[in-house]
Figure: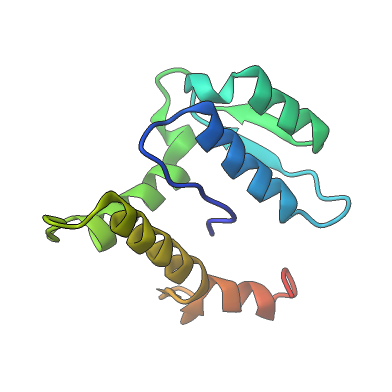
Length: 133
């Protein structure tokens, strides 16, 4: 389940650090999750590392050349491209409108998309299990 996201036109420190700050703001007191990333440079920047340390996050990075380490994230991005992007035309859609639509998709994915394994949305399932209010 996506906890937080930022949308931009370049994978820079403001984008990645902003997303991490949003995710940390969603943590409950005492939660110290593992944050897994690939080996991208933005996950090795001082700002990213500082945010992890300030929030007690355990950093985990994929092994070089080992894509299975990143399978969950890759699977999510595959679904996002299939459901939101492919077989659609964005001709004439402004960047601002594209970002609005993508943000709307992300909210739908998190809150409403039905996961067939559960027969309900991920959010509803987590509520059923007492994992979120």
